[in-house]
Image (cartoon, rainbow, N blue to C red; front, side):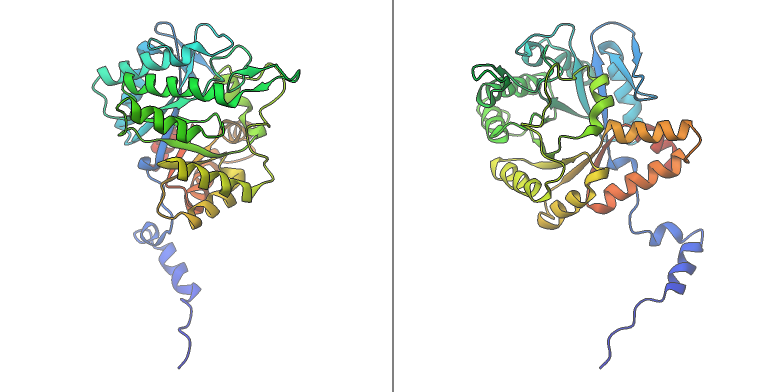
Length: 332
């Protein structure tokens, strides 16, 4: 009895070269249904503010957000995730959990428009605090840092407020200990047990977030976020964080950033194949491609499609990406 011989490379080459068979034998195929589009919404009227460090991206006022969502829905994109820019910031990020806050208004505007796109809301405080950190600052030790437990209380208020406004899913990104448990308990207690949680389970303290902090106006005013985001060197820690969030009630997992952490995406999917997994193709990854393409150094379309394909190939079931609208055009 002999081993089954491998499928000859010549046969694969013949299939790949056939114009009608090429897509049928391709192992990983991108579609618009793979994408979740991040959107930045602000107060005001009929205004679009270009994000200089993210070419083609804009902050959009509430009155325009529903039309933007409908345009994405028409492309076959199933979901968006909203990030808010408040008019005023304070030390406790009060606009984040104000029932008439920027995200709450945006969610209602989209729902009232009749759009059926899934509306996911980012649950964090960094966009809303005047210090730019993801929680309440504790200065009692003489070295300012985020107070984990006080922050959890406000994140629960924020999540419940978003759910009351009509959010279909919440996505907590603050990386506080016990966050998923607190949010699940808080949502369930207010009658929102049907609202799923997409957890930023493996969120690394990455240098690739720079353009996003311009877009969300959320750069820390002192220090950094290394005390509550993960060390980029730690892959095994990521799996521990994922396990904790699953145990606490996360419905969907996320790895952020995606491109530099394809190994983590793959490891998470291998360990938890049945759990939906998202990869966030973050602002720095997006903007580097844009900048190189502008210089004529790379083919933007081919490079972008290659990056997104690699994220899906590694194991992501969905991809958060600023490139989604352009990619849908390319795929069409």
